[in-house]
Structure formats: C-alpha cells, structure tokens
Image (tube, rainbow, N blue to C red; front, top):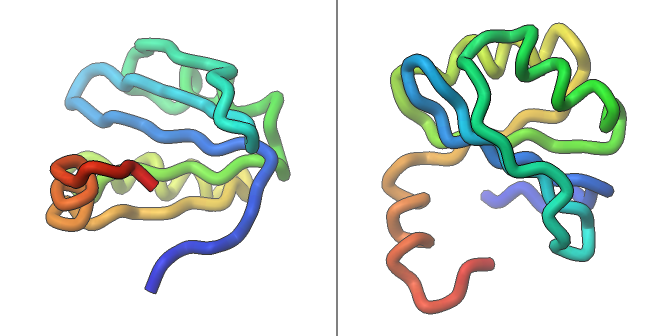
Length: 97
C-alpha cells in the first residue's frame, strides 16, 4: 500500500544521529527548503511550522525515526514512514516517482 494523499508541500528528512537534512518541495516539485540542521525537535519545528496543515513529513525507517514521528503526532503533521528496503529499491531504479 502506498500513501496517495495530495499535499501542498512534501518534506523528506535524511536522519542521522546528530544532524538532519531537511528538504521541502512544493506540489510542483520546486525546492522550497533544503537545509542541514541539528537533530532536535525545536530546530525541526522552526522549519515545519510555516507549513502547518499543508505538509506531509516522510522519513526512512531506521533507528532514530521515533522522535520525528512523535513530534509530528504532537503537532498534527501528517507523517509517512518509508521501509528502508523499499527506499533502496526506489533509489536503484531509473525513475524516481
């Protein structure tokens, strides 16, 4: 099953233990935000807050995704967790959709 809901903005987060790479695209695929930040809730909220009720946040399933999920739940951001094996299959494919 795939997540098919349309949003005005899409946020992908590359999670690391101490830093996050955050990329936000609009519905046309234009880059709105592309930033490296510290891995803490306040820094992430500062970036996501202007897009409240218009954004979905997606992360890869790995050891440090729990706090991002909890943060999205607390602040009513839509959240999608991608399975690492499927993400690898998408990365290795010729089309990225």
